[in-house]
Image (cartoon, rainbow, N blue to C red; front, side, top):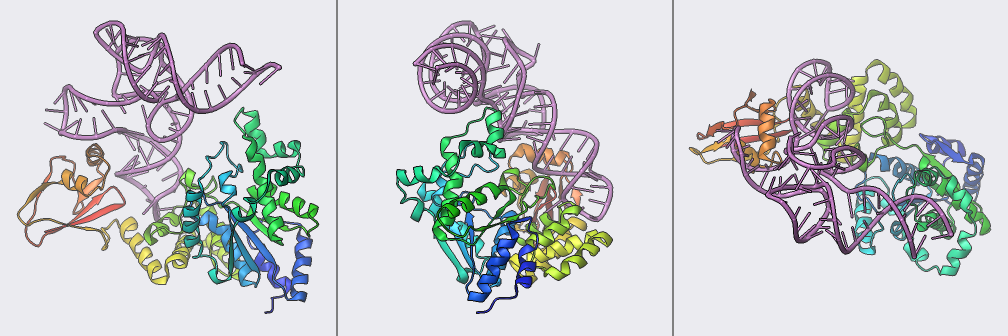
Length: 403
RNA sequence: GGGGGGAUACCAAAGCGGCCAACUGGGGCAGACUGUAAAUCUGUUGUCUUACGACUUCGCAGGUUCGAAUCCUGCUCCCCCCA
C-alpha cells in the first residue's frame, strides 16, 4: 500500500476542519506513516443514544471516510459503556443512562446508517464496554487522579450548569476520562470530534502521555448549522436533515436552509471535490437559487442515487413551485356510487390528526379538491365510476381519490 | 441531618376557589407573499360537534366545596440553602 504525499493528504484532511491540535505533530505522524508504510489509527467515538443519523453526524463520519480513502485505519467506537454515563457536553441536564439492551439496539441502527458513509470493509468496529467495563474501582481512582476538579469546572457546560444551580452528577466528570481511556487502549493517532468535543479530546492526549504513549492529534470539525440557520443541527431542535430521509423530503429540506449556509454544506457534507469548492463559492453569489438546487441534488444523489435525485427535483418543482399534485400521491379507492364526506375521508386516511384540525384547515383554505378550496365541513363527494379526484391537504399532503 | 421552594398543554412560563380548555413566548400547522418547504405578515393550536354545547386535561391518590389548576391530607419526583 502506498499513501499520497503529506501535502495531498493535508489538503483532504483540512477540508472544513476548524482546528488540528497540534498541526505539526500531525505532519510528523503522516511522514512517519509514509516512511514505515503504516496507516495511522483514526479514532471516532459515537454515542449510540440517538440512532437517527443526520447531516450533522455526517460531517465527522465523512472526515473519517476521507481518512479511510487516504489509506488510514478507521476505528469506530460504539460507546456502549460511555452511553451508560451520557456525554455531558452541551447538555444542560443530566442524561438518563441507557440500559445495555438499548445500547445494543441503538448501536445496530447506528451502524446500518453509518455504512452509507463509511467504507464498511475497512472500518474496525469496537465497543468500549469491552475494556472500560473490565476496569476495577482502583483503576478508575488512578485514572481520575490525572484530572483536577478545577479543570473540570472550567468547562463551559459544567460551569454554566454550576452557576445556574443545575445538577451535575459526579459520574459526569468521568465521561471525559472514559473517552480518554479509549484513546489509551486503542493507541489512537488521531481522534476526530466536533468543536464541542475539544475538552474530551484533549483529555485523551493527557492520558496517553501519562501512559507513555505518543499523544493523539485532536481534529475538530465545525458543528453543522441546522435548517433554521442558527442552531447546530440536532434532533432535539428539530432542525435536522436525516440521512435516511426519503428523497423528496431530503431535497426539500435542503432547499429550506438559509442561503448563507449553502457553502458550508457543500464543504462539509457533500462529496464535491476540494478543487471545485472555489467555483461553487462564485456560483452562490451569482445564482443562489440554482446553486442551492445543486446542493439538494448532490445530497439526494449521495444518499439515494442519481435517478432518485432527478425525481426529487421533479417532485419539488411540481408540488412546491407549480403546486401540482404529485404523480406518486397515495391512491384511495372508493366504491362507485358511494357518497362520502370529505371530512371523513381525510380522517380515515390519517391525513390530519383530528377532525378539529381538518375543519380548521378547511376554514383557513388549506384543503382543496381538484384545485378548488373546500371550506364546507359537510362537503360530500358522490363517486362515479372511473372518477379520479386530486386532494390536497395543507402544503405537503396529497392523495388521489379514485372509484 | 435541618430548613425552604417547585411539579401547568410539544417546550418555556402565567394563573393561586367561579369570568380557565387555561395569559404570554417559542415551536407546530394553515393562508398571503417568495427562487425556496427560508424570511416576513396574518390566522390558528385539547377531543367530539355544522353549530349550540358536551367531554377529558394543570405530577399521583384521596378530601373540603354548589363549584378547584387554584384550599386540605398522603404519596412520588425535582431543585435550593445550611451542616
